[in-house]
Length: 446
Image 1 (cartoon, rainbow, N blue to C red):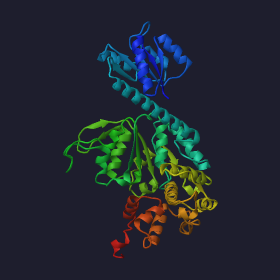
Image 2: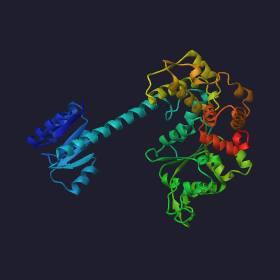
Image 3: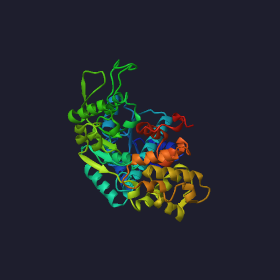
Image 4: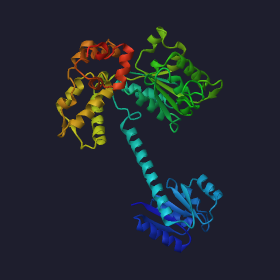
C-alpha cells in the first residue's frame, strides 16, 4: 500500500484529502506544518508528499529537500506560471492549483506513484545485473572474457574511439552498449547502425543526412543518424562494409568533429563518441585497398576482441542457463532444466553462430518442450558438429559459411539454413550476395 504524507495547515482540507486518498486504497498521514512533516518523515518513509505551498513558518517547497528522494507534489490556491516554474526548479515533481477537481488530483497521484515504481524497478534491475554480471549484463568468467571486461572498464569512462572485433553472434553490440553505459554519455542516446543492412546508395544519406533536393526523392531535409547521436554514442556495426565515400565522411567526423549533409555546402558541428565493430579483418581490407588506412588507424585506438563461444570453456554452461531462464520468462513458461545429455551436447557443439545461435537453439527448445526438461533432441544440434570439426581452427568464418551453405542448401530451406547458422534470413541473403553464392534455383537447379 502506498503511503502519502499530506502537509496542509487547514484542517478541513487536510481531513478531506485524507478521506479521498484512503477511499482509493492509499495510506494517508497528516501534518500541519513543515516541522511536523519533518518529524513524520524521520519516523517512517513515504511514497509521495502532497504539500501546500503556503504553510506557517516555512514554504511548502522546503519539503523537497526534507523529503530527499521522495517525490513532492505542490498544491496552492495562488496559481500562477511563476510559482509553478519556481516549484519545479526547486525539484517538485509536479504542481496542482486549488481549487482542484478530485479526479484530477487522483490521476496526478497515480501517475507520480507509477513513474516512481517504474524508476525503482529499473534501478533495482540495473543493480541486480551489475552484481550478477561484470560488465553491462555480459556473462562469463573465462580468461578471455575477463580481459574483455577489464578493457571495457578502462576505456568506458573515456571518450576514446573503440573498435570491437569478433565473429558474428559474439555480442559486439552488447559490448558497445556496456562501453556507453560506463561513459559520461550514459544519459544521452546510443544510436546503433548496421552498415551491412543499409543499401550502398543510401548509406551516406542515412548516416550524414541530406538537404531537400539533394537527390531524386529528397523532398525535405533530413537529419542523419550521426546528428541524432550528437552528445551520445554512435555504434557502427559491420564497419568493414562501409563504402569508400562514407568512409571519407566518417573520417572527417573523427578528425574535425563535423559533418556535411548530402547536398549541403555547410558543415555542422557534432559531438559523438564512436564505437565500431566488425567480424572482418580490417588490416586485410586496408591491404586490398577496400578500407582507408587513415580511418583504420583512427578506429583502432582501443581494440576489444570478443572470443568465439568455442573458446570460452565453461562460460557456455553459464550462458546456456542464463538464456534458458530468459527464454522461459519471455515465453511465459515455468522454469525448465537441461538434462545431462543436453549439457553435454551444448558443450560439444562448436557454435559457429556463437551466442546468437545458442540463444536461438534454446528458444526453439523451450517452445517445443512439453515436459520439465530440455533434451538434446529438442536442441536439434549435432553434439560432435562433424562439419565444423572437419574445417579446423585455421579456416575463417566466411570459409565455414561458404562450405556449410554449399553442403546443405539442397536439403535445407533458407529459413532452416539461417537457423542452423544462428543468423537471420536477411543476413544469410546479404552474405550470399557478398560471397557470390546465389540460391540454387537462381542457378536453375530448382
